[in-house]
Picture 1 (cartoon, rainbow, N blue to C red):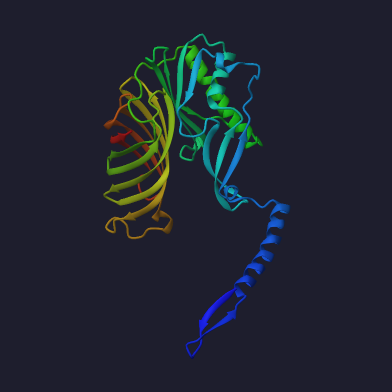
Picture 2 (spheres, helix red, strand yellow):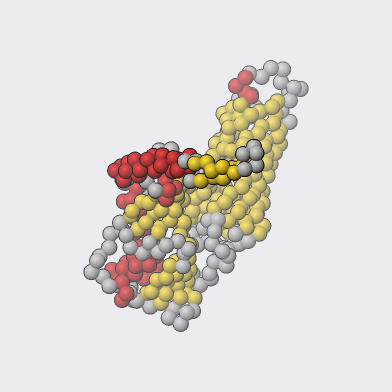
Length: 363
């Protein structure tokens, strides 16, 4: 390699410089062992570092010709046809990666095979618009995996017949492997969809909004003999409008005021059980455990033990709410509350109040 450099007298001399060539030679010697090590130990590629795949085998009769199903199934989700979903997991126990839940068959083929197995005598097209797998931590008694999905059925002329808002929770067996459990969840969806079609369990009125989590916020004003309380909530849940019964859980902000004291609790464990009693009305019962702090009027107490600075309160409510099916906007209700103050123990421990609730739902 030749470089021409001017000397101090202005003339040019030719200097032989081999530094760059030496660098390339050393680099080649360094890379070759790394390449051999990678081939020997099969070092993972970048894609395998940032993603993972869980293979799910759904039991199916291989002798069935899914193309002969009377109900044609289309999968309009943005994911691949064999991808059940994507969730986050940890690789090598520390690295957070996206995990693809990959089935051995397409979701549409699984539906069509189920319809053939059940000898479905219905003709039309079923579309899978949404399918979401997530872990619900809000409802204590049904904590765990939840599958939400939205499907629609049209006749052979393309006329809408029915839609379904699915919310499935399948109890996991002890020591059951993840892939086997997810396979049972998928099979449960297939069976329930096939049964809904076979029994003509149709909903003439389609869900009028984009299927996604809906925002709900509401507040309850509770009137007691010695004061009042306000209980505020905020949740993001999938719409349950086609269900007759369902459960939910949500934290709340609770404030209590009387002539002797005031209390505040943030969080709590509010568990709600809903039952639709008509197309317009819902009955809601709740059970709540609240942990917070108290403040007392100095004019009422000369001394307060330290434990009474803590709030430990349990309560139950029954509310009737006006909330029609597929409702959007404001709603309200009335009900009763019965509560017990474990702490503080220097005020009336049993309390009963009348409550008024007002809220808003935004699909």
